[in-house]
Length: 106
Image (cartoon, rainbow, N blue to C red; front, side, top):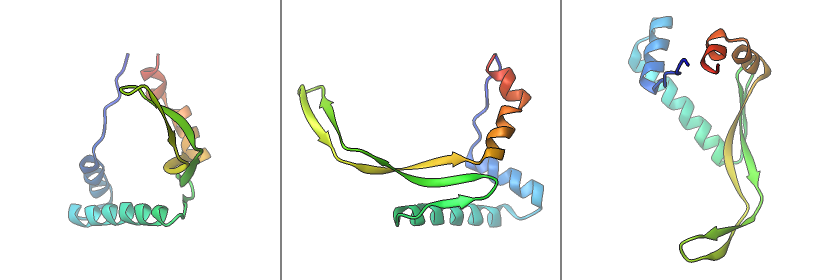
């Protein structure tokens, strides 16, 4: 079975720098600025849609009863929001058609 390699942010930055010819420092600043904008906008309740890539959205989790197993008591976990990523149809299709992904999952 083929194992996928995890890719770090530094490796993504190096790849973008190589493909575009832009200095790694400039790519790093751009990537960090993008992440900051995503975090800030989502924390303000806004969703971010990147056509052809996917959507960063806030998902609402309903309140529920959880268990504190160390004290054997029930606790109420209030409703809250969590960040989520939904890939675009073209992104999903690219993964579905990838031969490397198919080989890794056999």
